[in-house]
Length: 396
Image (cartoon, rainbow, N blue to C red; front, top):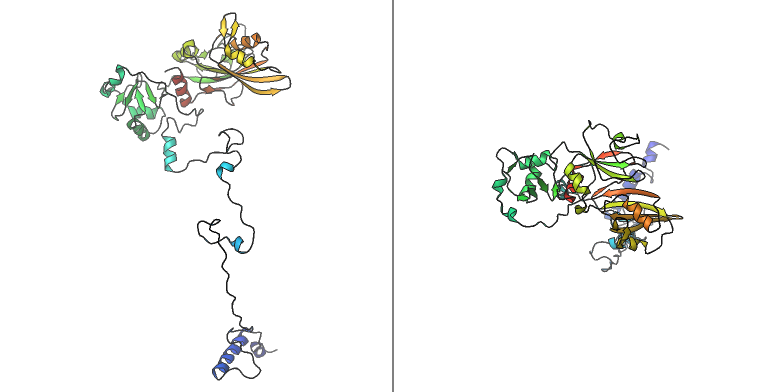
């Protein structure tokens, strides 16, 4: 077929256009000819069909209270999307946060959340464990409360916000906000004036009840003592001791807070702060200590209540503050006990008295400081927040 024939073909678009124009001219001249179909309303090869009226989809006001258009799947008869479960029906909604299976809290975002984190004392610190707020004991109101802030001012000292910022509490601007909000105490007196100067060598500063250690020479460490190590810095018999694990401290004198016998493992505090060491070991401060005790099972009921009520020992009556069964396997039982007594081998003697000799004993916590996942035989420095909690636990 020639080029002209292809152009005149009814299947060609040009042919359709010319046919439509011819039909329109025929209709304008007096209608369609005999035996011809009128396709002028459709404008193409196919006859014109009027559209069917569109059916409006029914919207149930109970299922669609917002009054919006129904979902595309609903109009086509498809499956409806599953409704979102309320928070109370989600798995783990009733569990305590932090336990296995509990819902994870949504992170706080925005400038307000950043300010709330940054305004906490040592909030930006990455070292150590976050122990939360300090529970301040009820303070006795005495003549100290009437002391004017001008008496705390030391003309030769350093501005309070600068001292706090140098100690790592927060930025200087945030420290000024803390002072203005009445969250800072100097020598037991709340300070709200930004112009107060203090002597860093003698001033005792608290932020939200958290003691700030301004002496950079003070050392606070946690030692996870293995079994077979003697709780002394030196041993004349040549047995492994604490000094074998302490490195890079240039020979400064360290105190070990309390003692653990050779067979006992776990947390041992090391410091050169003599006042803190004395208070942590003094019975009047009643610093709690947490132990994990392994004994042979089964462990009968009533023994825990007996330990809490008190056991008569050769040096007097002793008891535990709390008793909790942690785990039980065939032939062995793991128990957690908390007590504040500092008597020699007190945990072993208590369990010997009730007929269950200790197979393994590990101290996991002293006051607010916990061992966590620290590996055995290692030593780590406490963070500034941990030091503040430790000092506050004994009134420093």
